[in-house]
Length: 128
Image 1: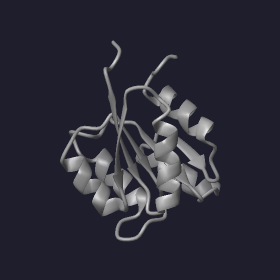
Image 2: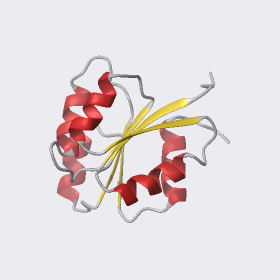
Image 3: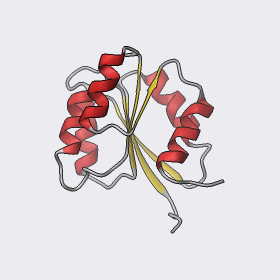
Image 4: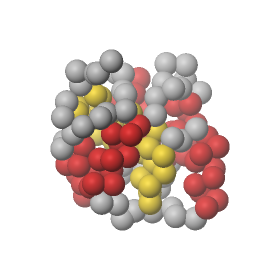
């Protein structure tokens, strides 16, 4: 079944990085993007709607990305939503911890728009 549109939540504290991710996502047809500036803001947006995918940075003020992943995975409504981490944290320990928490994909910055697009399409099973 093909979705008529996809709702994606981007949780990233850097406005420049958030814009880069959003612009990449907008190149995928039928994409609706909601932006959040930190984990707490992301949690608030998650509780207000349904998302097909959540993209999260790890290093953020207020609530970091791994804490947000943990909260999402423990919420019955959102526990199966794919999560993509895009972060500067490139060490294996952080990647392993994220995967143990239930992250589906883990990209390290700097990321290319095409890399974001391909990963998102794979997570959402979009064939083009």
